[in-house]
Image (cartoon, rainbow, N blue to C red):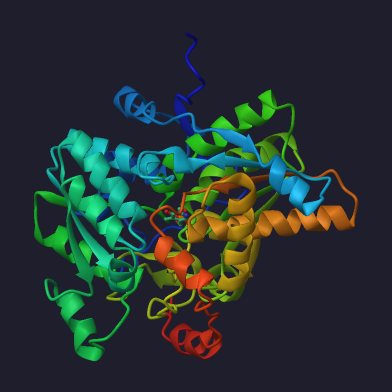
Length: 444
Ligand SMILES: *Cc1c(COP(=O)(O)O)cnc(C)c1O
C-alpha cells in the first residue's frame, strides 16, 4: 500500500511576506522581547520557531507518526451543496473534523506537547473557549505523558459540558474561568461575579499558574507564529489534493478566532501567490459580535485581560473587550494572530463578519446537503463560501472556492437546539462596548 501524502515540513509565511510583523514587546519595559523573556512560558524549540525566518521547518518524526492517526485529512467537493445553490462555482472543503477530537487543533497540540516533553516539562496549563483546544491538548498530553490543566471560559463550561468530559477522559483537569484559584480570576470575580468569562481572562489564569510552577509551561492554541506554522500541514496537503483534483482555488476561506486554522489553510496558498504570482483571494471570516479584523484597531495590545502577556501588534478590540456569549465560543477573542494582521494590513486578506443567525442558516443548509454538522465556528466559513458561490452564480462565473472545515459540531448540539427552537438571537450592542475597550489600549 502506498503511503498517502503527509508533509515533512511546516511552511513559514515570514520567509515570503514583503515585510514581517513588528516585534513583540515586553509588557513592563516595552522593549523588544528576548528569547529569555519567553522561556518561563514556552519550550526553546517553540521560541525559536516563533522568530524563525526559514521558509520550511522539518516536522519531527514522532510528531508525523502521531499525525498519521488522522492525516492527511480528506479534501471533499460539496457537490450536493453546489446543486442546492444552483451555482456554477465549485466548492471544496478540507475536512479537519476528521481528527480524533474533531478539529484542526491537534496539529499544534501534538507538536507543542512533543517539544515540551523533549525539554523535560511534565505539566502544561492552558485556556480553552468552546473546549476544542483543551480537548486537543488533553489528548496530546495523554499521548506524550504530560499533565494538562485547562481553564475553560465559564459560559462554554456550562454550554458545552461534554467537551469538559472529553478533556477529563484524556486525563486533564478542567476549571471554569474566572476561578478562585488565581489572583487574576479572583480580581475579575470581585468586579462581576456573574461574568461569562472570556479567553482573555482564562489566558491570564493559565499564564499565572505556569509562571508560578517551575515544572510547568503554558501552551497557546492559536495566535502565535509557531502555532500558525504547525497548522500549515492543512494548506500543504490541500495544495497537493487540489492539484490531484485538477483545480486551483480562486478564493480560500476560513473562520478566524485567533487565526490558526485560517493561517493553516491560507498561508501555503498565499506563499504561492507571493512567490509565483497565483491570483488567489483570501477571505477571513469572524463573528459580528467579536469583529476584530473588521472593526478593531491595528495596534500594540496585550493578549490577556490582566496584562501578563507580551504586547503584540495585531488587530484588537482592546484587551478589556468582553464579547457577547455567542455560540461560536472559539471565535470570542479580542486579538488576532500578528501574522494574519500583517497580511490584512498589506492587503492580502479580506476580512468579513457575520451575525450568528445567518451563520446558523448556512450551517443548516450545509448539514442538510452534505450530512456533516459543522461547528458554529466553522459555519462562519461556510456562510462566506455560500455567499461566494451565490456571487459567482449572479455573475455566471466558474469560481473555485476552497474553505477550511475547521471542525464538526457533534458536541455543539445545545447551540443547534437553541437555533431550532427559535431562541437564538443576534447581538447588537457591540459598538458601545468597543469604544470603551479601545480607549484602554496601551500607548506605545
Ligand atoms: C478553535 C477553533 C476555531 C478558532 O480558532 P483559530 O485559531 O482562529 O482557528 C475555529 N474552528 C474550530 C472548530 C475551532 O476549534
